[in-house]
Length: 348
Ligand code: TXA
Ligand code: MG
Image 1 (tube, protein in one colour):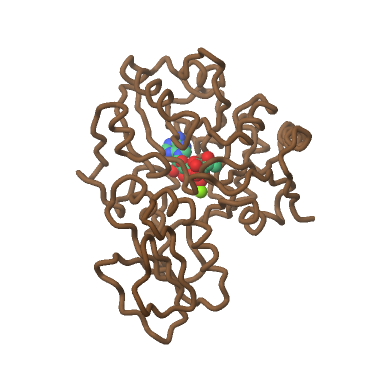
Image 2: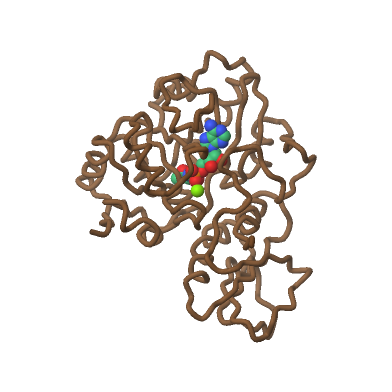
């Protein structure tokens, strides 16, 4: 039986919560991408998440938390959810967690923080830290409230594949392996959350570019975040996080990237699919299919459309090979979009 795509009525949310309470998994919308959710403290659910996605267990999961109660302190909230051990955090570290949560939660920021002993090793790949995020999609929040426990949720795709930003994408990735997909419409951001690590003394390490710009985090904390091993942003720099493999988000077809200043001389006879990041394609561009992410160069729009456009070029029968234009510059969302495109490149 293929998965059911459910309009998230209260009844359907309650049904999804019952599946979760029994140790099962369901696909839920978030503002970034769709997630495959299971209760973070239930080993059965965690094992299913890895099995359904065919994900290696060295790749830790993000635990999603409900919104805090009115007036509650964010850090105490993470402690009371059973996830974060705040006792090992210095005052600076605690303040930084609070500042970032106040500024960006609910929203597309994941903080990797010292974990409490009760968090299963399967959720954290045996690391002493846990990734936490408070999502802002109302359906994710309603599900979290109905379940009453944090939900571990990686993106709802098979390992290494393009992340899903619509319920139909989830259906084509996992429809034969799960029971329920909650329909929250197309994702507002379209790229995964930004992942940072805050260590016990408050040092901030940038682990994955995503929905929140690095510059916005620097501004919020009034610091400069330096990437380890590189003094500036370079999309190809490997980041020190498990699971951030060089190859990811991979279409099945060969994908090549280029910058607008160096437009490739592609073989006129090949059946090409072009992914144009912004603006008009050049006059006379030959191709079996052309997808423009944002005609006006709006990076939010480009991010929102990225995974859907990649997926449709990958599925188009008239296309054999994909050529993707990187976004101009490397600031903010351009960095995150380019990171995904470079990881989607074909590696023989
Ligand atoms: O937007 C998102 O973050 C989506 C939605 C569903 O919330 N989730 C998502 O999860 O992208 P996933 O599993 O595809 O990516 C999680 C990544 C891991 O691959 C890892 O790199 C990093 O987050 N991560 C999680 N916990 C970590 C930890 N304890 N230490 C270091 N990195 C961690
Ligand atoms: Mg993923």
